[in-house]
Each structure stands twice: as structure tokens, then as C-alpha cells.
Length: 268
Image 1 (tube, rainbow, N blue to C red):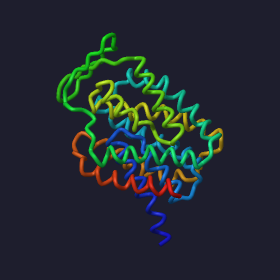
Image 2 (cartoon, one colour):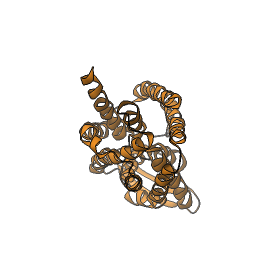
Image 3 (cartoon, rainbow, N blue to C red):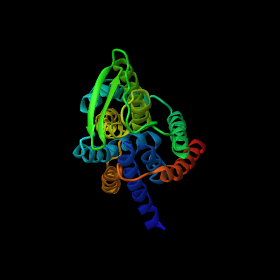
Image 4 (cartoon, one colour):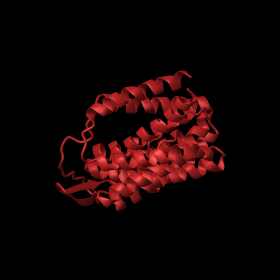
């Protein structure tokens, strides 16, 4: 039984890494429950340690996407201006907030993500489209299936980046749960570019949040050797599969699992 208890967090970390690479997320939505419920860290330590571990998965995912040429570096860097600063500020807000508030906030965020996955919400209605916004910043990217052009509102980009940064620092997630839908639905970025660019941005956002948590003593570094290898392997495989595998069924099944974890955390 003790062996099973030791292997379960490793397996779940591998799954978190796969989803991180596949969907452009950091994996914190799974890592925080693993650290808090399975490894018995306090919720504040779970949030801080999650950000440290996400550095491993997001870097692996980003480098894998980069080789395919899907990362919009200029868009990502501009969005990170607000995202990194808000992530750093939020990490200190966690230190001043009761653990129950942090746990409840994470449960709500997890529930929202679960329903998006269960109902298989479409991030984009077409595979190729051009979004024109008056006064927008026109971006252009060449993908294997054609050339995409999209126009981005810079002020709106900063607002969305700030919201993603707050989610990252306060909840211990990479911010991809905000960034990917925001880029696709609000800014009109192609889904493949959004996923890849999100992986790039997450490496920057979680660094800011991690530093703040580390200064407050919320990072359990001893956990890293246990979970990091499976997390990295999962992120690599997920990123490799991101443009080959259809995942509607997987998202629905996993959404149910996320909902169960959210309910358990809210009631614990």
C-alpha cells in the first residue's frame, strides 16, 4: 500500500505533464491537489511548490513547440509585461490570505476548468481565420496548413495578461487556463499558436510567482526529485502529440476527475 501511495503522485504528475504539453497549460490544476491532498503539504506550500515544478514542465513543453515554429515570441513577451508583475504581487497576497480562502479560490477555478473540459468547449470556430480590430497590432504566422493573420488590441492584451498573472501567483497555476482561451476567443490567435505561445509565457510567469513564494518559504524543494522527472516526460510527450491527437473524449473524462478533486478540496 505504501508503494502504491508513493507511485500515485508520480503517475498523476505524468498525466499533469501530458496535459500541460497538449493544451498549453502549466499543470498546476493537477499539481496543487497532488501536493496538498496526496503529499500532505499545506495549501500555501502546495501553491508555491507547484509553481517551481511547473518550471520543468513548461520549459519542456515550450522547447518542443518551438522546434515546430508555433511560438509567437513578440506577442508572448508583450503579454508577459502585465502577467509577470501580477504573478509576483499575487504571491505575496497568498502569504497574507487564510489558507481556506486560497483553497476555495482554487476549487472554483478548478470547477470552471472542469466544465470547459466536460462540455468540450470549442476554443475556435474555424481552423483558419483573420481577425481585424481597428487600430490593432497585426500579427502573421506561417504554419504547415497555411498562413494565419490576426490583429491584437494591445491594451486588451495587457488586461488579459494581468488576469492570467493573478491566477498564476494566487492559485499556483501557470496561467494557461486564462491565456489560451483569451488568445483564441478574444484576440483571435490560431489555436496551435496560442497553445505554443502559452507554454512560452508560462515559463516567465511562474518564475515571477515562484520567486515570491520562495521568499515567503512556501516551496518544498525536497519534493522536486520525486515528481519532476515524470512531469518533464509527460510534458514532452503531450507537446509532441498536440498536433496529432484529437482529445475531446480525454478532456471530458479528465474534466470529471478535475471536478471530483475540486469538490474534495472545497469540502476538506
